[in-house]
Image 1 (cartoon, rainbow, N blue to C red):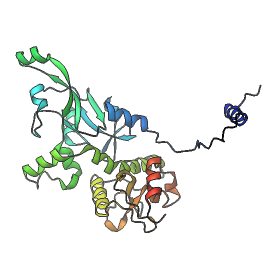
Image 2 (image 1 turned 90 degrees about the vertical axis):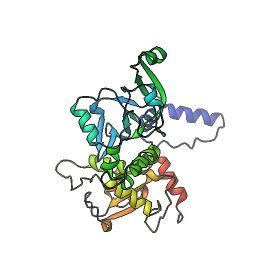
Image 3 (image 1 turned 180 degrees about the vertical axis):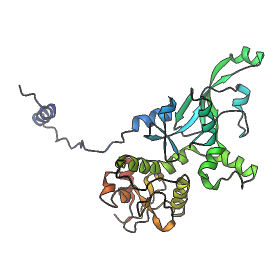
Length: 301
């Protein structure tokens, strides 16, 4: 028995009613990770060690979505957590795999980690009170909302983020870098880099994989080059300004060797110029909002 096509039935009904033809397109590329990103931005996702996958130096949820990591189940009380001091007793959040996470893994303490993409460094944290008066007031264990947490210094040092150096910077410089770290800016700056790394990791078999190990300092090299380019595509036929969509500006290795970070081997390209640089890159995913932004804002369109 032949089944009716529901879209054909709908089109016939619209025609009988005199309704204009539906011009909706059904081939629009949709970000396959949009729902995950929404969950990460709202409450975060409680994860096991297996869910935390490194893509280059970045922390991701199952290798798919860039995120930061923090401990929900803290050992600190209300008075520790409520203060806004950079030096307070509180969990730190992580944005790369650093020696702190190495130590935590060695101790088997990954039970209550949360992956998040919150736009501010305000988190839901479980507090633990020890003093009798505090226990009487808040309860022995209680949940606190919108707790200010700060970035891990070891993560900053691991990526040399914005020049951070444990050895060379003064205590005040390091304290200011921790205080000023902006989660949303970090995600905007590095999402495209993660997408590119993930693309290369999934396109090759073991037998065809080229030299493509990204160095740990590549994200900072990439960020610095894009910043020096004023967040504009270097393709003279494009020159789109990606300041408002930093995740859509990439750094391309011209010779295909991903650990060759010589300046002459690197080109700052918008996501569409990167995607169209050769036949292989045509399979690179570019989200619809980024694509539309580039097409709408190219000065030479």
